Image (cartoon, rainbow, N blue to C red):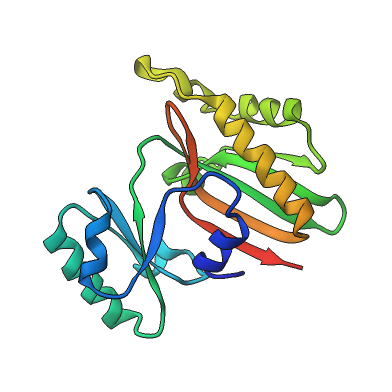
Length: 194
């Protein structure tokens, strides 16, 4: 799998949370809080302690220093925070079925509930919509008076499918993709090229 920065560059034509590489504490002043610092690794960042939330500039500077100490050879990025529902969008290669599109709930749901839907590719917009509606937790998109924009999420997934086909991507893990009330954004990406 490619690291975060290379994966983001491969997916650059798809809506994603703003980010930039951080060299020193002065670079931390260009984003509104809260935001996240992430180490450019190909493994799951949470498992390594390679992603941290920052709530103010002092907090961010201290966490940047610690990340530099723990990951001295890796680049670090700062990325805007974005509220919404955490989802997973992925592509898996299967010896029997070929490429499979995966859509499911991210965050703790990914580990505990495993609420996901699969389809063989290629897929249509109708397939993508059916995949979302197949999820057990689909009612969360309209819970508590919220009205998350599923059309934006579906559009993002359509763009992902096009990039996978165009760039000959073998496997893809977008986790999370945040579905908000007005837009959906990729927050983390891991890409494996053929």
